[in-house]
Image 1 (tube, rainbow, N blue to C red):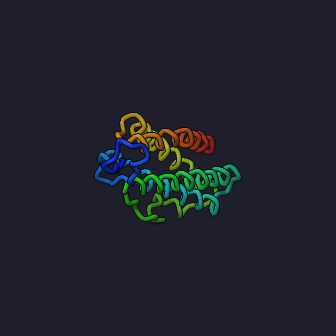
Image 2: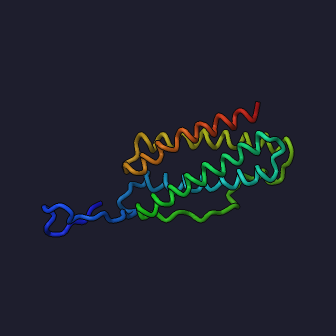
Image 3: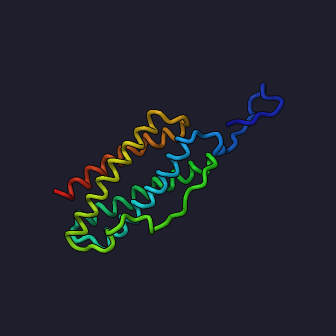
Length: 161
């Protein structure tokens, strides 16, 4: 959104103003909120994977989850601020049930299964936003994140083999 002075016909008289949540469609706003929750959960899963993972493959995958989703979460936080959307609190309690109570190979397989299911769901949501969202900035961020999500899905599937 731009705000212009009365002399808008003259260059340099307009300035950008942060958007507000009311300017976003409910689809765009819900996508931002859900993507934030999901991204935070992925970081927490990655941290748990570093602590409890029994294989190097799971530990490497877990670190990748932390790195990639932390970066994506930071970008999303800036986008949300620009759009006037308040993100949900980062709650470790949003972890999938049962994951914390497993260990060893059982943990590795559970983490890979949860990550596979979650990334399949996320890819659908990100593709929907990228293709049919209303806000160009939100659509662009969703599109930009898709290759990372696909790579995570492939890596999670590889762990289960």
